[in-house]
Length: 220
Ligand code: LAC
Image 1 (cartoon, rainbow, N blue to C red):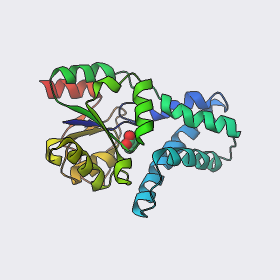
Image 2 (tube, rainbow, N blue to C red):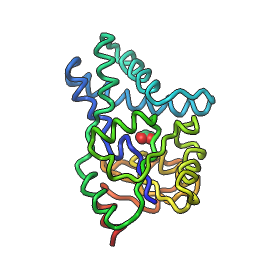
Image 3 (tube, rainbow, N blue to C red):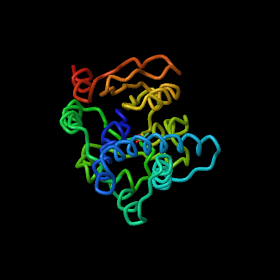
Image 4 (tube, helix red, strand yellow):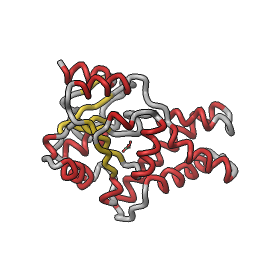
């Protein structure tokens, strides 16, 4: 089983900057896009640690408010609502669809394992034209905790009826790669930007520059 992270791995959360540019200037849009994503991830960590779960839609809306405030910016309630809705229309990275097609032909079961709520994941995959590639979609919402909590990865394995070691988690997010590895999954880090890996753990056994390379390596 190949399990794909969604945000940052299949679709590009920073592309929300294009929608931000309808209401903010270019520099502010880029800064808000980055701050929004960073705060969103931070909130998922903190809510999970405190056992105060709120779903990813709530987290996404609240972290936008925080990103705007941190930069001294304000939006109308309507613009805010449009942006949160826009989060369901993030574009897929160009390498994703061809790679998923190639990987599917090579026979592994492809699934999505995301912190997104089931509704958000479904809208995102459908809008990106990716839903048909996946045999199953597993949401962290089922266990009311976010990745990288081990319970999320264990839940995905249980849903698929396999051990965690029978799943390879593919993610561009180092925290996700490390969390999956800690829970016993095989991993692959999709490093499109040439970033350094987190120093909290050893680098993953498999690193690729995009999903095209992943499909070439795994179908070789
Ligand atoms: C997800 C976030 C972590 O899709 O990118 O789960």
